[in-house]
Image (cartoon, helix red, strand yellow):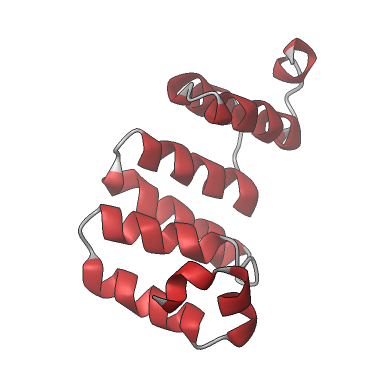
Length: 116
């Protein structure tokens, strides 16, 4: 993993940060992501997940929303936006996202937990 930390490419930072995120090393993961420009939807999304894990609701939702704005067809981002909204006390918006997911049969198949 050391060779990834020395690479300044955003993709390498994302991979390295993801590994640290999985190990629950959130501060280190954030530091690696922020060590260079963060322009991709995947990078913003991962940073949003890191912030949510750290309890930073004020940062989480805007980051995930920016990721969705950059890549609206990345349906995998929507369940995390739902979870972030719900965790951060924005239940009305969370319900709206849930309804959006339920209105698309192909998404309901991917995330059956939204049926309940």
